[in-house]
Length: 155
Length: 155
Length: 155
Figure 1 (cartoon, each protein chain N blue to C red):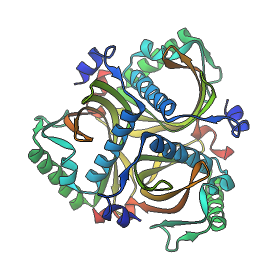
Figure 2 (figure 1 turned 180 degrees about the vertical axis):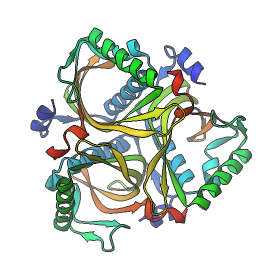
Figure 3 (figure 1 turned 135 degrees about the vertical axis):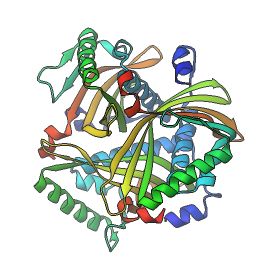
């Protein structure tokens, strides 16, 4: 994904203000659902056959059911430790592949806030998404999250 | 506020790119005024009868005069410690109640930067705002700030 | 720059959603290029005679060639320490001077992520930019970065 976005940088179209806005709104709602623990509603923001890859995990998670399961497990582990996460996505570079498909490379920060404690930056990542139009909204068909602390040597 | 936003999630309208942009610009200016210590100009971004509630404070602050006073007190306490705050609002979920009224749920981070020292994340919060159209701009009629460290157990 | 932006605040025009979007996209790409070490491509986002000033450095850097050189030196110093930087720009206040010239005051955070280590907020700054239209895009003709830790006493 990252590679393909970069390879074709010159030919991928810039998007309109309206599409950029749609993507910003999509991410705001997606992250708020995740951080509120509304795991099923969050998973609905992926396509049914969506793929979630991350350099922090050896094997990609495939399909919405598996994505829900992974999110719920992560959620329960956090709750057991009394920690809340807040996901911030920013610096969105949105490219149109077609009317119904976008590539978005963004930065994502995860903040960790322990109950009664000090908020900290948990991890800094990049997020490479393929979004596809579904009805009048968007879903993630492919997400690749790259933690910076695991790749800092690669420039 | 939070509750009403969630209860009616299905029926609240999505907003246009233009409205989303107006809200982003409004917050950028509002936060820059606050962080620059321009307390009176900042307070003008609230309605005259605006209400500012926060789970960190037992009693809501009602009316612009009281909001100015609270902000000035906070400002002076920071100045005495040689600390600057920077407020970042992001992940804006904007819903239209009517042409002249918006509900916005966002994330807000407060960065603290001591003179000659290291910037840190001071607190992570959510911000639930009611915005009303005034002239060709917007004002906050109701703000509710929820510090995550005080609610981390609530999922 | 800062001063002129503030002095004329009342007369500088609000921009359209489309311009605001262009600026957001511009910064996303600019920061991603910098953080990816694509120094030459990053420098192309400045005008040939662009000026980069910062309160952390005594002398402004003038011209794209000097800007490239400075960025490469900074990049190599980071690489030698195994640290990645991520630049986040936010809270964009965009003002139109004319159809072809914008003033933008934003907040910028630099995150530092050491290889195998913990991400932290490196510095918090404000960024005052003059953007000029070049072809169908924008370039920075003047940038002034103010580190908050060096000015925290100035309110």
